[in-house]
Image 1 (cartoon, rainbow, N blue to C red):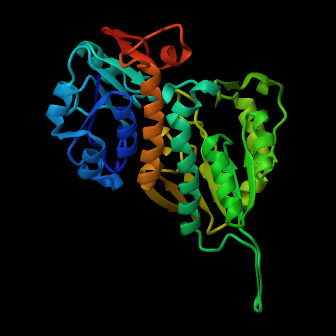
Image 2 (cartoon, rainbow, N blue to C red; image 1 turned 120 degrees about the horizontal axis):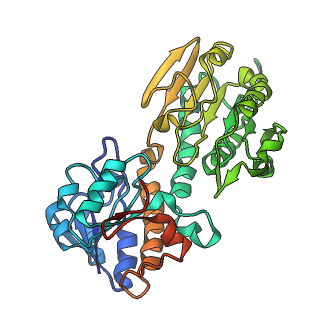
Image 3 (cartoon, rainbow, N blue to C red; image 1 turned 135 degrees about the vertical axis):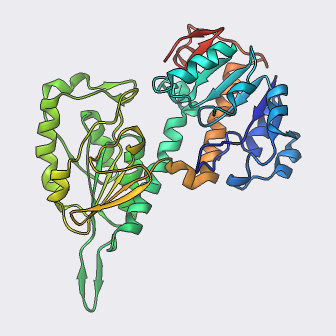
Length: 368
């Protein structure tokens, strides 16, 4: 089987789906690899590095003509779609629940497509979990962006002129991104608080040194599904708002990470709450691309309102393109070798990894 890597065309995207190291590992397993010229340059991987692994460098059209499997990070662009052919396999983050027309076009072309963001969060799939690997980096970068925008330092500092109190950081959502945000803010010396609708995240947050703000509610017993939070009731969200407001109004930096799989991001912070926050505070909304956790946030904009800076940043992993590409490529290597253990695809729908990610097969749409 020949695996093709094409350059990502999403504006601002700097990652590549397979690095030279991952290409080398696949070639060692008996696969062939063909790479679009310049595909890795934004991640600082040159064509020559790919050639040294034994990969072939070609133009985009040649990659589509030669490859049996196309690996990507983002959904295919309108420019890419006409180049697919019947029987070709596509693996990448497709977000089928938000891209119904794209999925239909892939089905019409006879493509077999796997949505990598739908990898189930089970132990044997951890090394394929692209959302976790990318969210981990995003949580780190969100804190760094917030620290840069904040007009004060994070750690306690005792000087001859007096003592500087540590910054207070509040994190909404204790998933992979939230946990990394906690760890990063603690390493920088901040006092960190965190909240999540899933009670089981309390121990994880506290193990990293954060104070956990918990809301007791019977409806939370089954609030987690497949490692993700389900949508909470209006009553619970009201109770959570009341419990968190005191910390929110004292916070210097707030990071919001809350997402609901296949749904619009929950609204956690309103303009009225922002009005009561400290002047000079900063909010980084990591969910802005899915509608945002913060009422005033805008994708890739910094809004200053009521003395608070609101940063809505999309595609945070792309800002760490080298590490993000390395981790994504390793996830992809593990998935491809799982899918093709003997060099040919084995589509076993009784396996929950295959069943969970297979979006289109033989013209049939399975998820949209």
